Amino acid sequence: MAYEVEAPKYVRLAQTMQSRIEDGTYPPGTRVPSENQLVQEFGMSRPTVVRALELLKRDGWLESRQGYGTIVRGRPAVVEQKDRRGRQALERDESRTPGRLVVVDQVPVPARVASVLGLPKRAEVLMRRFLIEEDGEAVELVSSYFPAGLVDGTELASPKPLAVGAREHLEGRKKVRFDHVTERVSARLPDAVESELLGLSDGVPVLSVLVIARDASGQALQVSDVLLPADGQELEDTYRLN
Image 1 (cartoon, rainbow, N blue to C red):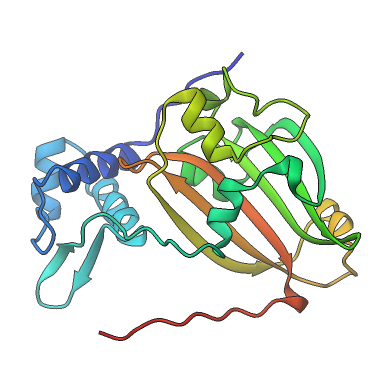
Image 2: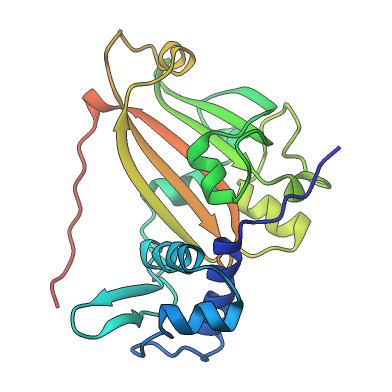
């Protein structure tokens, strides 16, 4: 039986502020209300307000400018490049991808995923773990996590590979709309299972790309942890300077 878990207060406040940015209440380029004003208006503690503002800054909705305060940036720009890991994780057709689906199960939510989904540490979520292979060699391990409320009425819990991407499947079955993606890149040592699946020697780190897909309100719809052997990766990006 699936249980709905209410998001923490700071996440709910951030979502409310996102809605106000979307509807023009907080136009881009303007200052958001002060912490004191937000505390009084929403009846929340200062630490809650501070966490909400930090969340919005981290995800690109707000920014701090010296001498001006906290400024509205607007909806984060959606990256359209086809080679982005986040887009691949959302749109991958498992049935046509070289590799195998290794796990589909309810699992304890990892701490970094729980904080994004607004779930308590002991909550369980559905995980789909897919191992991507090239010429018989494991090159990428993708573990995707879905909130309980999105699983019912879908094929996400099926042990069979999806014939369409998770994004297309969810948008068709649940009438949700994916709006933007945040990617967080870090390096860490894999656990024993991850190391075995990727065929790594002891002590070889992995590059983790945490892909957070949200709707326009900022609600997380899917979180994918994309692991790549760090010894075979190189990051490069080219961009214009204004």
